[in-house]
Each structure stands twice: as C-alpha cells, then as structure tokens.
Image (cartoon, rainbow, N blue to C red; front, side, top):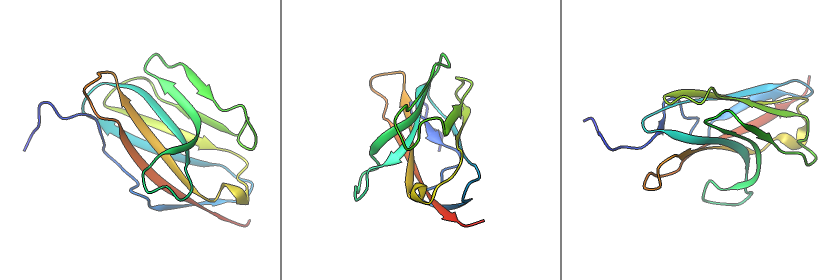
Length: 132
C-alpha cells in the first residue's frame, strides 16, 4: 500500500545491528532514506541506558543546504565527519576515525523533516571495537 502523506523513512536501517571497527582505523555508517523532505540529518552517541533513541551528544549535523557542524569536544573532536548532498531521497554517510576502545557503544542517526507536522525518524547502530 502506498502512502501519499507518509514521512521520511530509512531505506537501509541498521535497527540496532552490530558493526565491527578495528582499533585505530576508521568506520563509515551509511543511511539511505526516502519519503518526505528532510531538513537535517544528525548522527551522534545514544544516551546510555535510554530506552528511547535519544542523543547523548550530536557528533555531526548536516542541513539540506549542506552546512555541516561537527562536535568540537573531546573525545570526538577532529575524529568525525559527515556527508549528505541535501537531497531526499538521499544517502548520508558519517565517519569515525582513529577508533578507540571507548567508541564501542550505540550511535543514532536522526532525520528531521522540514515540515512541522512530520515525524522525526531515528535509527541505531552498535559499534563493536576489535584489536588490530
């Protein structure tokens, strides 16, 4: 069944799946999405112990004009980046460099619609860190 008024949704959600990263290397998290107009795509750390997929810290925020904001606080400063061309349907990729053992946790991607009535959509992924 097609829905003419449905909001955005992930085409390729992680749904909390585990992704493995190697200590000292980099890992990309890529989300494809469609439906509705997306105003902002954000990626960050999930609040520990939270049932809801809420942010502890927003690591990278990209708006549809391709203005990119990255966290400036340790331990993630200068280790995170993101890319999205502002289109919807679209593809957003976020990168974590110089992986540390402390990076082993859940991360959240949030799509914020550009219309007030539409719902925010979130997805989570868990990073597992292994030694070299």
